[in-house]
Length: 296
Image (cartoon, rainbow, N blue to C red):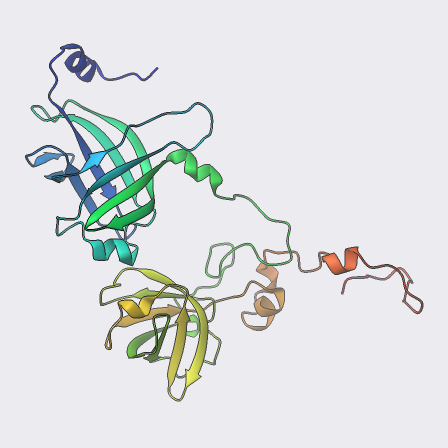
């Protein structure tokens, strides 16, 4: 059974409560936003909670065990700090949402009801509906090592050991041409070989996507410029002159780790694991069956 503080429990037991909901949204880009369904600004813990008229939460359910609890919050996109553009840009993807029940007459009487992450967000006619997933969602994230031929870490991680912030593995670029929703042409990377930044990442420094990170699918040269293709439609938001930092990529193959990074000692995969073709094969006449390694 949920235990509340003595002050909060006493207020509930009084029979005449003055409670409201507050939501603290902590985005991955470091921006924190506070909203409340009360009609006045509330402030506590160093954060202001602005009235969000039309903002409402659904019924909250709690399940036993490791199931992911879900609820939702709906509202009208009327606040300049909660814009539809930011939602479309993905700034609220996996944002942390703390739901707080507050006595608006005395904000020191409050309780944290739950902590969630934002899942799917639906938008229609200036109304949004955000799914809130409980912290059990973390249990769905794979942990530990994987027994597979490919590397199971990302380039630049502590285990990998490659410093992707160093000049050979990163560069600063400027948008020159918007080819399509998923492709842009940039300057500043002409000294890098084609494919060097494939499977890498781009950190946007200026423009509407500033402070966001995007995955690069491919990197090709076009004269002195470079063409980057992305997994997300960055062309909808990027404009000529936007600045970004681009970081080297890796397809997580042993051959790439060895030839591109000279880092085979830190390879986090099992490149000699037999594949399905080998497991389904059978001895043939002329095979060299002298006890030597079958997978080379």
